[in-house]
Image (cartoon, rainbow, N blue to C red; front, side, top):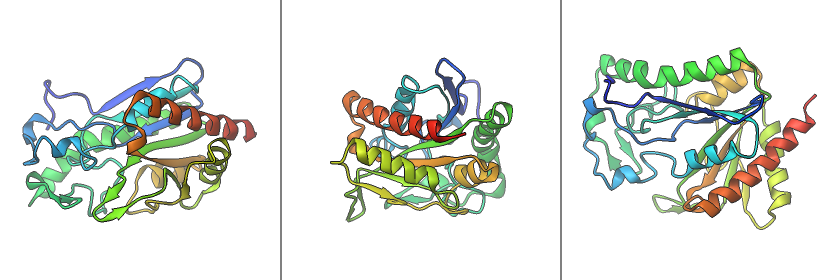
Length: 248
């Protein structure tokens, strides 16, 4: 699937220090393997939220300047294979995303799906697992962004904090950031929820390891410039430090 002319799927970075926080960015890139061409998707659509989480990787990298953390990010587009979906998810390799068709994903064989999984999805999650096993972090923070409009629905919240069976860190993030920036509209488990089918990082690496965690969703119109990214990195850093301090 991948050749020497393709980037490696996993981008790893870290800040100085012990790296007690593990950051993940499942939808950080929008690269497409050369073997798949352009997937039949227009270049303009590859700039949109359907291809990646706009601003999420920049936000993740900015956080490295505020907290001692390790970052595991994905370079390839979620349209190639979604690294926050598991094998049973119907959206693992989407044929349609927000009403945009992806012709290159139609009628894939099991071998096609297996090749993308082995080349992109598996190395990403193997690296997360290795980081946890090698030096267990104090918490896992998965960084995402969401579009202000999905179809005809306008999302009014500025950010959402997601969790399923272990909501304590998500609740604390929302409380701390709400106190620091009371003008923001913050939500628990919106605009999405976490479950075992529609998500992968939280149930497998967070819940599976009993590791404190939160999936952060920031509305992407707030991450369009350095000032917005810096603001959100600062807010998330406050919450991270608060949760770290409260841990035994």
